[in-house]
Length: 104
Image (cartoon, rainbow, N blue to C red; front, side):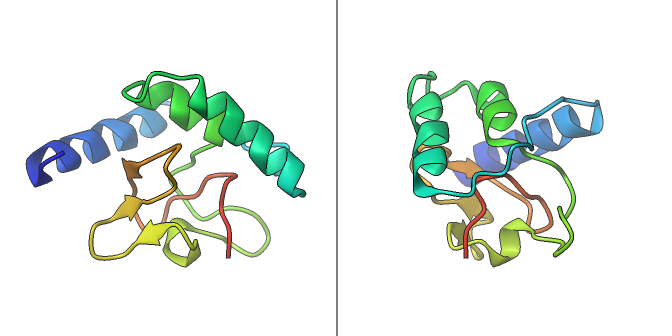
């Protein structure tokens, strides 16, 4: 994906959330088994089905939870690319977004 395509996809994702896309923010996975179950759901999707990826992984366009977690502090976030490097997601993300696959 080139830089222009990445920015277009980022804008599309932002618009989906702004338009009220309902995602599965809960339950937040507490165990490795729950984390793996979400990854299994994502693996069943077409790699280009970004909207379904967003729904299953629980994307929101703002920091989330009592600790105000956000992509910026997630171990999968690539700062210089504004990218989620979790292979099952592999999408552009804004630093202030969050999903339930968030990890330190």
